[in-house]
Amino acid sequence: MMPQPYYQDDQVTLYLGRCEEILPALPDGVADLVLTDPPYNCVNRASGGLRSFDKGSADSEFVSIPDVARELDRIATGSIYVWCGDVQLSDWLTNFKELGLSVRGCTWHKTNPSPMNGDKVWLSAAEYCAFARKPKAYFSLSCQHNVWTHKTDQEIDWHPTPKPLGLMRQLVSASCPPGGTVLDAFAGSGSTLRAAIDEGRKAIGVEMSEAYCERIAKRLAQGAFDFGVGA
Image 1 (cartoon, one colour):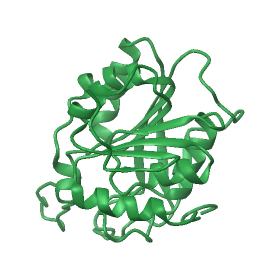
Image 2: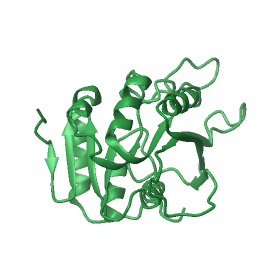
Image 3: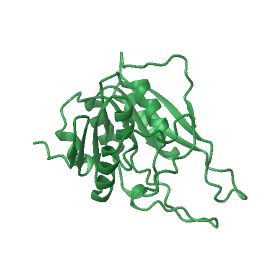
């Protein structure tokens, strides 16, 4: 039985709940593209003598990679993008490969990384994404490399780990056919859902935090934005 949406309009359906509860209720093949950003569960850590990192609950939830990978494979008809920490990248790629998908590791190069501890270690200017593709999946680009250069999103100050809207729009445009549907199982700041709207696609979102769902709903109800586009 499908749960009632927290927010819904002609283009977007947003569910409040945990992904392990909502995803099994979604029909097979309901999305052309999955583009999602689970908690890394590796940013919050002891300082080791340096300034500490703490992204709060946005980073601390445990995610069962094998279970979620199977659900995303069942739901997607085309490609899957999963943002992850460096220690998780191999696990995501291995699980998708075992499901019979073609895989590739991708990188977001941040042009304006945080200067934290920059006098002691290399700046953290890269985040990683596991890309998985089914046969005949839609792809609108040609001979593009797997390093995406964008600045961090500084417009969203109510979520600790938002992805750049411009980058999400780029991935939606590249891997979801016009008029298709994008799924984000960890909606967070709502950037993937907003990107889908801005690119003329439909979207399904799942988010466990009611506070974030409220913020996402307000963001989706507003007009199109260009945060980070062309950065």
